[in-house]
Each structure stands twice: as structure tokens, then as C-alpha cells.
Image (cartoon, rainbow, N blue to C red; front, top):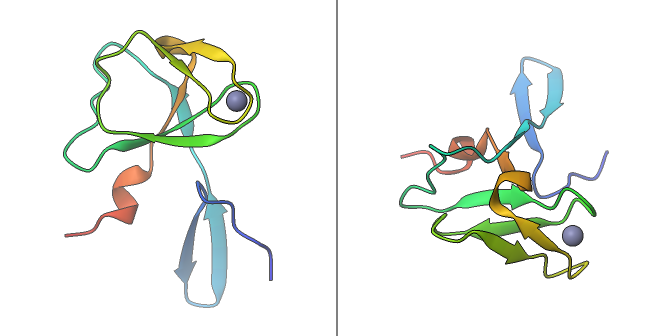
Length: 84
Ligand SMILES: [Zn+2]
């Protein structure tokens, strides 16, 4: 079985498994919502969870690079993880 990275999503339809990930750069209208959002460091691919986007720059906890908001990549499929 293929190990899943934390930001990957798996969907199973019948006997077919599809691993998807979809990250897009933060844009002006990106909102974290009530559950927060996963963002990915553009340099090392580390996934970091944020509860808001009211910052301009954030340091990657893994590679310690300071990354400006619009260079982080946002998990577009994040809502899949928080079904209600
Ligand atoms: Zn990093």
C-alpha cells in the first residue's frame, strides 16, 4: 500500500483508488474558515495548518524559510477532511 502524505486525499470508488492533491497559491480572497486550512511550503513541501490568514509572512517550521502569504500553497481539497 502506498503511504499517504498528510495532505493527500484518497477517494475510493468501487475498486478504484485515486490519490489526489490540489494545492494553489494563496490569493486575496483565501479564507481559513472555522476549521483552518492546510498550507504547503513552496520550498520544502511541509504542510502547516493555519487558523487565519491575517498575516503577511509566515516562517516554515520545517525549513525555517520566511514565506510571504501569496507564496504559500493552499489545500484546495481541505473541505473533504471535515465532513459535517
Ligand atoms: Zn519549508
